[in-house]
Amino acid sequence: MVQVRVFLKEISAERFWDVGKRIPPVKVATNLNIVGMEEKDKDTLEFPFVFAINYTPGVAQISVKGRARVSGKKEELRKIQDARKEKKPPPPIVMQSISNVVFLESVIVSRSLNIPPPVPLPRIPSTKKKKLPEPNYRT
Image 1 (tube, rainbow, N blue to C red):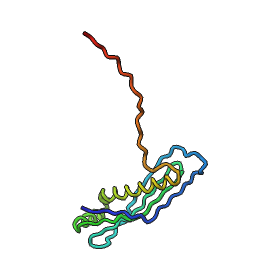
Image 2: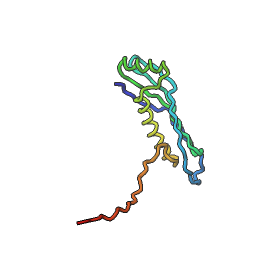
Image 3: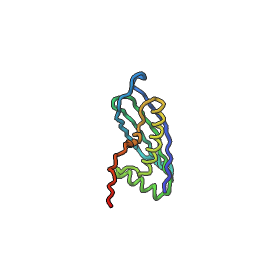
Image 4: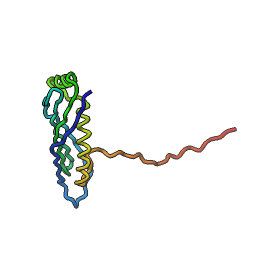
């Protein structure tokens, strides 16, 4: 099984909306790009990545750059390299590991800038009780 470690090199964030103005409802677009693959040694691969978050309307922008270091057995790494040569995406464990780290960091940055988080907040269903019909008893 491969092991994935994610390292961040750069976090950039900017709030475009005036601090005194109320932020309107926004749509959040996220984009994760793996920009390459490098073989560091016989049992390690590195995937440089760029993660971008854009808000519509233009409230803010967040960008995260880093590298995912994948280590494991030679056979597993060879499969990953062969898949990359065939223009296939990296394995889901690599993408999920990167996503977990960058989303977490982005939520922290968004809180510091006082902008909506890039992940949807859970919705709690309304607790309106439905009126139940009266029981009908017959003897």
